[in-house]
Image (cartoon, rainbow, N blue to C red; front, side, top):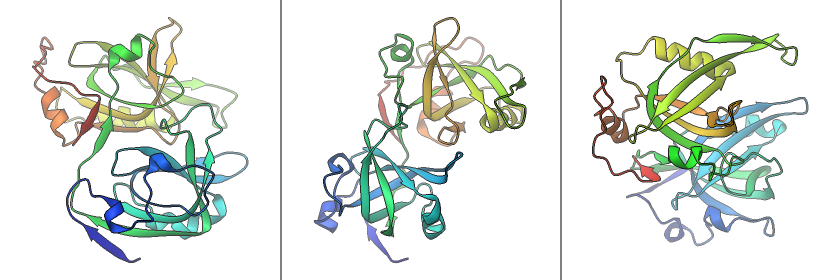
Amino acid sequence: MESFRCHGWPFDVMTYNRNMFTISSLNPLIHEWSTCVKILHVWHELDDVSNALNLILMDNQFTQIQAVVRDELIDNYLSRLIIDEWVSIKNFDVSRVNSILRPVPHRFKIVFRSDTLVQSINMCSSRTYFNLTEFVSILSGIVNPNICVDVVGKIVNVRELVFVPSVEHSQGGYFELYFGLRDTECIHLECRLTGDLAVEFYDLWKHRSRNTVICIIKFVKLELSQEHRWRCTNVTGSTRIMLNPDLSITDEMLCWNPENDQVPIITRKENVME
């Protein structure tokens, strides 16, 4: 796979190739698109019909979009689609996202074709981007529950991992875990994880190296609890969790006094780059 190198962050793809388009300009009316993106996430989506490969991509304008590789094309592209790598993608279709729940706000998605070309880009920067949503906005109900969000907070009140019997699941049930996140304004947000992600989180929590743990959850959906209070929960495959990642936002939140959760002086922004 050939590659080219871009210096600086963010780089201007238009100076590299005039035929490159930003994600915000993509629409179904044109069929010969080309774009440069960073791969934020890759996961398989299994259902009764197919085994599609799903991706979340982001361009140098920090706009994100979902992409789909159909079952019969996965072997052609899987080895080239690596999380946190930058690539150029050419010759793909753009179609509307039909599902009610979207992992990102973009109403369209990229659909790979048999002639889609993927080319590696060697970037100098390793920065990570988060589109963090304030807890107060979530709890007040002003955030669209049909679009996934990113959240960050200190982990509190972790309950025991339980197995919930259910005839609707092939394994006779599913694992479930509840815990809370507390932000820098001491606002509490309840979180509910299910399935393999609940088991993964619980294992990481049990083997934590320090008492205070900062958690970032990416691509999480919002739901109403039985008490009619908004909380976040995972979407199978797409949701990612990070415990005490080596990022500046983690260091800022670790300034809390673990005894009384005193709030450090931090300027919070909705869009955070690491």
